[in-house]
Image (cartoon, rainbow, N blue to C red):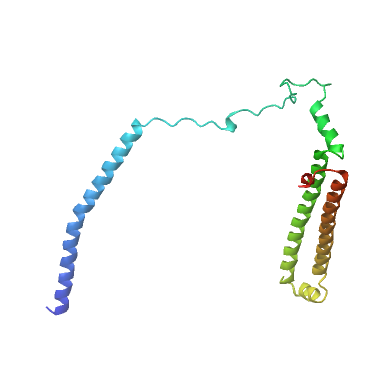
Length: 188
């Protein structure tokens, strides 16, 4: 026998020796896992069942009722809400705080909406300026014409003018409020 053969026999003997030691360890691990599973099943049997969770889906949909008046009772069909009339009266009186706050809020909401629209338009224009057209005909047309970019640029300019007009309206309303003798805090 040569050196290589002895080396192979030694390797085989080593493997047999290792597998003989690892088999009992596997049996012990299997026994531990089985015992843990039995223990977990016993604990589950003893554990109380979870309480039922009630959600909105468990209740039937509520039918709308007549709006309640200040006293908490539903209003009759012919009865009017007196508090609503008082609010409307304040909203139309140019010397009231509610009137001015409503006007400023309405103008500020328009301004915020316009600024958001301008932001979207500018992002779209930016995207179109680097747009790649896979259709060669469209690419050639847009290379010389650029009508889509020119249209968007015109819309952006119009939106910028609208924003400037709204800002001017806010400034004019502040002057109008001051002249009417209102509190400058109403403009906020």
